[in-house]
Image (spheres, helix red, strand yellow):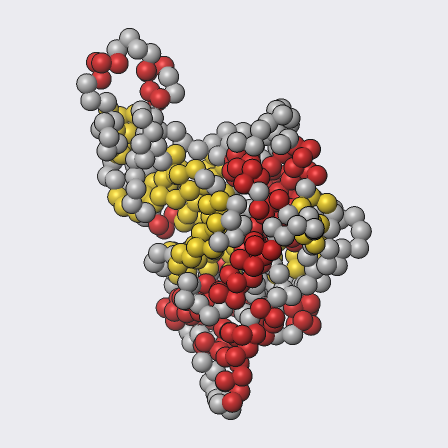
Length: 441
């Protein structure tokens, strides 16, 4: 499968089903897309002290994010350069000043540099010191810490961080600016939820505004009916503030608007969102005024974006200080991680509200999340049906589109999905050009 084969899967208003169901395409995504793009690794508050680390993966590559002795965050491949043994298997911990391989006790500084080898004299004259293995644990190609959010590009050379994200970073800015002290911190471990579907289905769903009132009628719709039967008592419980907006009509979502940026990024909720009418938290606006001044505080909080997709596989929800990371494990298997962050200097009631939303909407026990999962799994199975090879993404597609510029459109457009697949083809083929006969391995 070469670059032309990849491009042929993406047409202006439809994509071939193989982008979701083909194992060969999945392997190429790991080899090219998740190597050339900037991928979320973690938040630096997960490693506050020197020697603190977390383990995760970028695409299918196991990595360690660690706080080095100089205070900087490093991202290393999680394998020993000797026999390939994973260095760390715990999700998080503190390694002190060095990592030690559990197999043959090779040790490495927290920036990956080789520190010591038992009986090192046995390697004299073997050329180990001049080899790649003799240098230590391999660092990824590039790392960038943006306001605490750590991203990595596996490729040694490629698109720069600022060029890749551009104006889309405004959603992270808005999330962090909501903290009176201008920083956020991780609030406990994420909710992890396995999905038997392709990772792109979860990403697309984040800006699909024509499904909530349909797919969630059985959950959110039932909750709204029960509340109405109770006489709509006031004050509204936080649970009803969270779940009722999912049943907003099509016109509401049309008026929300969708903004897209180059390289596959975009967000719903340009004008308002389902998060716009939550009850105020006592003391929060006052804390924001003290830090930012009234005009700036109002501008920050009036920005109520719904879901911001950071291509390829992350969603940020700034008003509720959440991040969802969709980790691909196969063509039909995805691990969703849903994180909650604490706004430093804000009332703890805000963190509690965010945690409640996470449990109600994103947890394995969620009554809402299972609606989506049902649709993903039905689609994953249905796409194997013969007779129709293409998936339609033409809603509000009226002609040629320029995805290299920012655009704001009707909130029910599928432009963001088309934007993502434009970027998908771009980064999938970026490193194929020099090897047009590259095989799907």
